[in-house]
Image 1 (cartoon, rainbow, N blue to C red):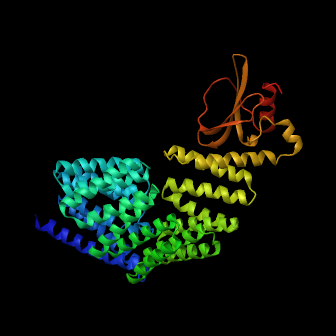
Image 2 (image 1 turned 45 degrees about the vertical axis):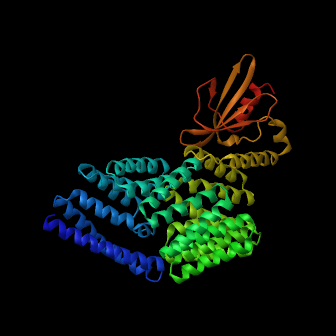
Image 3 (image 1 turned 90 degrees about the vertical axis):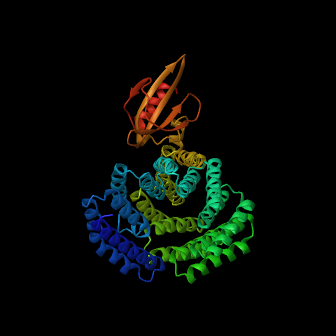
Length: 491
């Protein structure tokens, strides 16, 4: 190694050590602002170090070290001092440089890091692709710990896309490999992921066994962050098994561990878990109180993402306690954050809850618009959980139809449920003596809410679609569109 490269690597190591110290301060919450300010001051030096390493001909090493540094600084990134776009650019640069090198492990590591970055932003397809590329790279290099890391993360990605059978196979394979290698930390992490998977599958008796094993491994390894996660998982299992006393006890133990290690993030999660428990029990005031404290802790730590999640959870508690106005304000703030980070799964969830808040406030048109956008978004990202949203949309459209004046109802009993003021055009179709109408309401971009009308039948909502050019198109809206449809159907 050249003296220039060695000196630059040593400086990178020093910066990494500083970053680790800053993150400890951020997690403790006591020196959060000064730590973040220090990061800002060091960024020019970090960037200059990377550029000098590249100039010295150490592209792969430079890119690898500096990308690892920035990915490792995820808490700082999430707190808004480094944008996700900046992070992605650093990792992308690292990929470009690594692909020019001859060490497959460096290249595989970059794809692993980029996949992990995509996971954190709910980009499931990108994460899967990069993790698969990393897996092949580590396999080619006969790097078994790297293979285990990829199997673990691919399993977690499979959980995210609700492919539970594949997730279980991957996570168990990772756990077995780490066990064969004698890597207890890997076994512990895979066990925790398997526990979470079983919770998602609602297999709570099995999940609590894995969570207890996770807890034992965390305590043996003296990993208190993992200990706190395991306690939270055990509490959640008991919560769903109906043992609320045990659930509350484990959540409080989780909070105590967070206090002991001065980790505001752990304390925040424990408060949120207690809020969810009391919401289940119908104790709405206590639920609101715990979720508010969870939000306070996130704000104190400066963690914008956790704060957005807490606002969403607090809003749910407010909805249950009969305060939709407060819920709406919280949800609008959460929506703004999740849109900015492109976390589409969360965007869809918040949109639906905004619809519930608008409905409870008596604002039916807005409620319908929110749930329509949530359905369209979940459909686009491949999230199959739309049945409950479609049911709510149908109910609210029926309510909107029932709220019409008697005269309106007589004129449109075959076309109720359609927001005619939002209609852009209709298609009049006649086939084999049967007449029907396709109605397209404005939605977003090139997509429309598509309705089918047949004589003597209520409207059928077919989802959010692009129009198909079948029949005679008429560009009309409002009362004119409704009259044209009714006249064509022979009313």
